[in-house]
Amino acid sequence: MIKWLVENGADINDRNYNGTTVSMYLKEFVASSRNFDLLVELSDLGADFSLCDNHGLTLLDYVVMSGDDELANFIKRKKR
Image: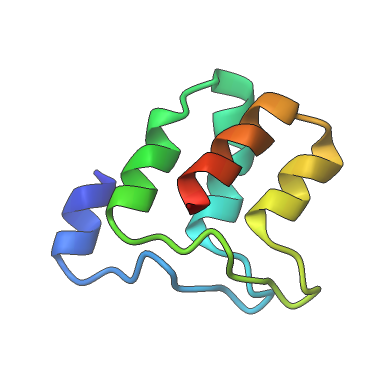
């Protein structure tokens, strides 16, 4: 579904009024489902995990604050 949206003009790095990105929204689902494939797909489609929201926080910042070391390490590897 994400690929279809991007292929049809959706901006994978678009933000809402708070600066929240798609990857930030999906963080909770990925953390609870352990379905890291969603983040792989976002990354492959050009998602920039280093974007900051209006508070200056990135996806990785939110994951680190949640204490999810496995997800944080996964995101660090995808940023390379």
